[in-house]
Every structure is written in C-alpha cells, then in structure tokens.
Image (cartoon, helix red, strand yellow):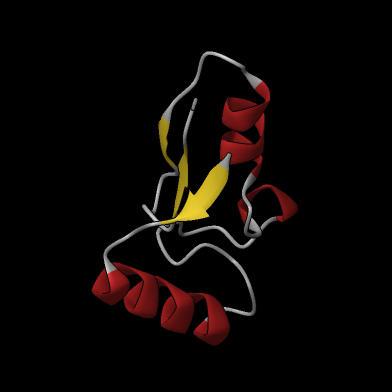
Length: 65
C-alpha cells in the first residue's frame, strides 16, 4: 500500500514544489519524464513486493502490510 508521508509539513513543502515545477520532483534537477511524480525510481521500487520505504523526496511511503 502506498500512502502520503504522515508528516504534514513535508507533504505541504513537497506539494508546493511539485506545483511550482509542473509536477516534476522538486528534489531532482532534471525535468524529465522519469522525474515526473510518481517518479520512475519509486514506481520501480513499489513494483518490488519486498520494498518498503519512502520515495526519494519523502512524499510517499510504501508499506508492506
């Protein structure tokens, strides 16, 4: 299950960054399709059934429960 980070301040900051950058991860310099939220890195991580953790910018968390 993928959910938002429970820290509302982090969510607010990242969402503001996403809005300012047209949906591209504010934690990445390049504005490529791979860095559009949900980024390619996190999509690949959540495809792994054993992965549990945050995406790069800590907006999302994948839970194995």
